[in-house]
Amino acid sequence: MRRLSITALPDLPPEVVRPGYELPDTEIGIVHIGPGAFHRVHQAMYVDDLLAADPEWAICGVSLHSATVRDALAPQDNLYTVAQLGELTSLRVIGSIRELLHAPSQQNAVLERLADPAVRLVTLTITEKGYCLNGEDLDVAHADIAHDIASPAAPRSAIGCITAGLAARRAQGHQPYTVLSCDNLSGNGHRLRRATIQFAARIDPALAKWIEAEVAFPCSMVDSITPATDDVLRERVAAELGCRDAWPVQREAFTQWVIEDRFCNERPALEFAGAVLTSNVAGYESAKLRLLNGAHSTLAWLGSLMGLATVGDAMATPLAAFVERLMRESIAPVVALPDGLDVGMYIDDILNRFRNPAIQHKLSQICWDSSQKLPVRLLSTVSDALAQRRDIAPLCLSIAGWMCFVRRQSQSGVALEDPLNDALTAIGRACNGDATHDVADFLKLDAVFGPLARDERFAAALRVAYSALGTGSPDALAGVIQ
Image (cartoon, rainbow, N blue to C red):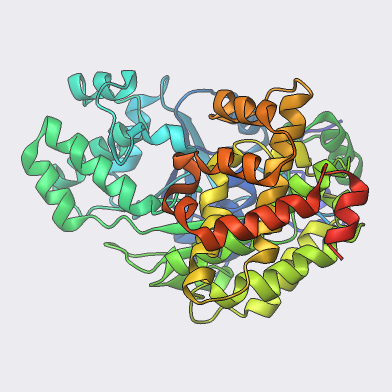
């Protein structure tokens, strides 16, 4: 079977969407660090929508570690297929990534690209650990950061590469590029700016001052479920395309990209591709964390107690009506929503996403790291609801569901995928079913509950919810979520 390539595009089936522009006519205006699956189904797809109208914003992808993406896509002219998952799956070939570089073996090419004044935007999807942070500050003891401080002209880290590129721009008298984090990290732009300035100060204080004064680091929020590529997807794409794609990717139909409208150089008109440009990224982030993620975790804890496996399974039970009421009646009224967000439509979208039959999102995976998720997903809403003297009983039922989940796992000898596994397991094993005893033990987890643990209104409502769940059996749950 022939390989996907520019020459193969005319022969693809007519229902396959392909680039609406001539690929040789595009010019690279964006460098993206971390061209993994999420970038290729998200930012690169938005840019693909723009290139027909503005061909100066094609992407150079830079991999900091593995060369697998470059090696897979180079033989197919860097083209790849996105399978959009729903009741009917649609295929689209993306051409916006015109160059892929492997930093360890092509370091000079990476630095030359970053120094190119045609590059006006650098974006990143490198996961939280890629920022090399220790709390809110740069971890100068991190092996890659220590190396880059000692050898700034041969950087290994994302922050080292960004700074080297900015140093070259400054030395050549060119405008800096905007640096846009696209990772799910609260206040991502603020954190990246702080770390970059701290890094630059270690190698050149004058450069650090220039970055502080001249370079923009907007915050952003991204959202779209992206299941991993597997052989089933590869075979399905090959059968439908009539040619082989070494690395297709897949995602749900829903996608969201919210960007702080603060750039220090020209920017692509991403709003015409569906992105939201705003001064209030935090408001969108709060809506996502509390409405979508809060409901997701609720489904995971309560659904796991019911013996269910996936979000789709949970949405086929009365839990669906419960989480809808939770979002509409208990969460939405206390969230500070940004202007322009229709909360009713947003909740409708969330429920449709949860019901998507093509997405098999495991409840067990959503339960991972729950002690870290609980404060931002639900406890912050509880605090605001208490301040507004609103009913917190439904919210407490969700939190009590987490407690019952911890109790069940611990007493069954199942380790929790959680940074607080040891402490939670000890509490779970000591639970005796008495709400006063069990809830009091959980509330001693200051890292989770903080000052809220000392609010008797919350403690009392939590005891009522925990008692109502009883053993946490499906029958007990059925009686309280109606």
